[in-house]
Amino acid sequence: MTPVLLALLVGCGPVSLDLPEGDSGDRPAPGVRYVEDGPPESVGGLPQLDVFSEEEIHDLVLELDRDAWDDLQRNPGRYVEADFTAAGVTYAIGVRLKGTSTFEDISRKPSLKLRFDYVHEGQRFYGMRKLNLHNLTLDPILSSETMTYGFFRAADLPAPRVGYARLRINGDDVGLYTIVEVPEDDFLRRWFADADGNLYENAENYCDLTRVGCFDAEETDEGNDDALQDLIDAAGQTGSAWRTAMQAQMDWDRFVGFMAMERTIAHWDSYSFDLSNYRLYHDPTADTWAFIPWSADLGFGYRPWSYPDCGRHGVDPAAYDMGRLASSCQADAVCREDVLERMLEYADLIDAMNPGALVDAALDRVRPEAETDPDHAAEMDHFEEHGACVRQFLVDRPDVIRQWVAEAGG
Image (cartoon, rainbow, N blue to C red):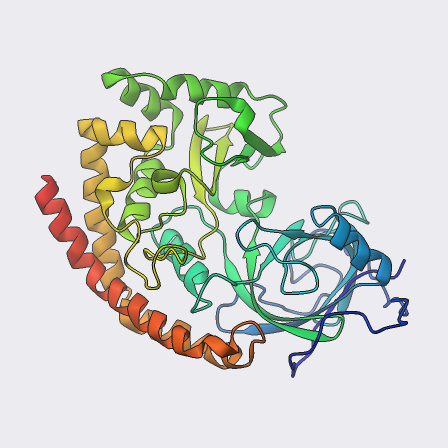
């Protein structure tokens, strides 16, 4: 079967994604090059490629043969064999569709998960086993994911790196994507002392620390769920016993920081406000847990199903108490005070990052792509309006947080 080709090309124009009538999809397979794991500068003479540069937009192409195309239409969540080419190097990989509210069929603008060891065990792409391409269909400014994760990382909180790509599928331009780092081994090694722990994602809506069964284990290096059960048991404590248990179970500094950052930037589509879209990692050496944010395309108080503008949904920091740990922290005087103090630190951090200039630079970076994105070009008025809204929200937010903390007794 001829796999999917992901190649670097420039100059894309919007066209239909359907395979031409009578086209079997059989195309000559590109030269597949098996690449062992290792750092980018030493892997098989790979060309330098800054995958997560926010300054560069990588032009990528994805080609599916008829069998792979049909398989993804029937079973979008199952991997099909593919070829991936970047910077002139081609890899045999697996690819599948992903997403819930952002899900789109392969014939439109699908979000994609790439798996580099699907065909060749041990194969990596610049050290990574998996990589996500997100379609940005819900983000009017095509930049919210990049900026949201950027604030977490600026606060020294574990969060994915993000880059940009222009994607073609079967020769057809499907527009701008974010290249999003998957929190696996390479990610874990950069953020934690021990990358051989268990990584979980919430696998159900409103999955909380009440039962193991609502979590999917993305990495199970520890071989069992005992540590997760211990965390769940600790989360059920009350009063001062809860704080004692949590300070032993959680990386307390990062836990407080995660709670504070969600509130500070109104990242509502996550644990504390919506009980959704988060990861939990257990560092077995430290024997502590940390949250990792996920699905950050609806940042800064924007919920398109409820409001047309940013800064309207999830902007009240007091409302971030939906998750079990978030509500218990709100009820605990010490934890609450720690979060309030950290929110003041993050207000200063955002001010120091010059948020107006930060948003302007983000919009300038993607505006040319938005103007020609087949899925986005007709929405340029919304792009500019929403961009101005996010800019004002972030410029005003530090003072809003300071006032709220003062009134909350911090």
